[in-house]
Image (cartoon, rainbow, N blue to C red; front, side, top):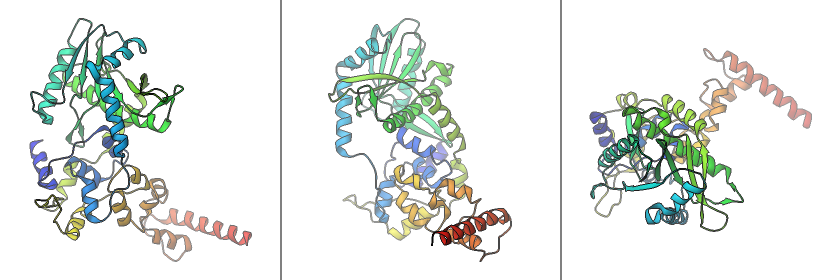
Length: 375
């Protein structure tokens, strides 16, 4: 693992690595065949800075107002040792937490390194899991980790609640509102996917200590503002389906060793910042380095990856740019030009293309007849 970390550090360059979070892992597993994203995320590369220097700035992300609102709501829920949250857990969800020990794991004695925080988190969770009494424990911003294609990605959930009965619950705090008992379906689904990442990481940590998976509940506590006030409300969200999908997708990720072994020596995404923190690396040189790693672009990437506009431009003229389902339906024909040539009969099918060529010719003939009928 140390040798892998060293290789990734050299690829990233002189800047500190960017941490993974549940959002980025959810996005990564949605496109498990993309070696480019897998490598850049593993190395902690600031993809937004890279594509900004290349002239393809990312077109998505949370607004600073949404981030500020989320931080303010989280601070409210956690104020006074998470007193408001505890009230919700006791009354609304009927979680028996008669006594509470509150542990803030955002740093350990002033040391905020991921490895130190992870070791402290593991120690405290092991102690809590072994408790035989009914004392409840809250862990604020613990540090977890997941094995992603052969390297460890460190994760930081909002909070973990330990309750009587020896089971842990992941608590996810979101600032989108629940109005008349209903929340935005898309936002709730995204929160469930992100929470499943934390549940899996927790289960792996406790599994190393000899505890079964059910020690971490598949019911996640989702805390949101209620109606149009900032008063929090809590509901249990079952993430078993999301867990199953996540585990299957993680198993399909291309291992980093396979990607690294195919790269030229000395490859780096370093932007060579000057004293004013401005990138000095020639854009053409950086573009060549990025293009060395194979990408798997699809239109879905536009909402999940900072590299999307760059990869879309790069994949112009390929069937991948039309989406995963279209590319798969075309049976591996990678060029739109080739697809059109096979459909019109101007190209001779290559080996293995006979069947798809016949389907394309039929579709082209049907389209032509329909257009002639309209005319």
